[in-house]
Image (tube, rainbow, N blue to C red; front, side):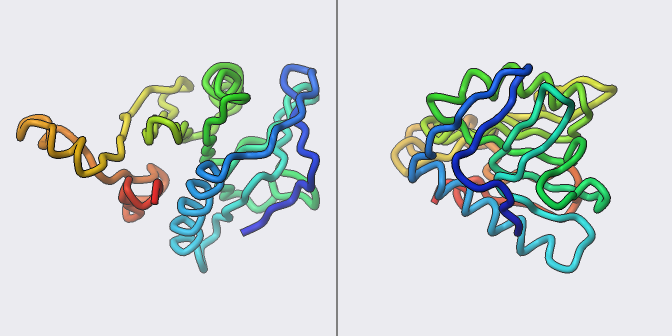
Length: 182
């Protein structure tokens, strides 16, 4: 795993510099849990997992996603990633939520990020967007259920839930939703 950018973290979004606030502990735990699972899977493979590295899309858009996977080694430069990663995850914070679900999602789509996950620590939910024909489609929304919420669901509702998800880049990387939010 690589973490390139040092504090203070500043993103450039549509030409405007925006200082990033420190993440909450829950945000950090989610990021750590997901990174650990993906890092173990990618060991010995061509693709690289990066945490909080700067991604340069163009002169006006330089973002620092929480987590990403880059499968083209020539995109990994000394101090940044040049061009679209294959997979990006943003863990929502109150200060970044709006940008993550609008502007950044649109830029990720425009530049061809193949898969984009938006994780809500508050809702313990993961929205998965897959790039199809140049446009993001919502593939699914996954939820973490505590015992009480799970018990309140009917058998039909339980049968409709998916408690694990796959990174679309890999057929054999299946992640239990609960492991992300532990």
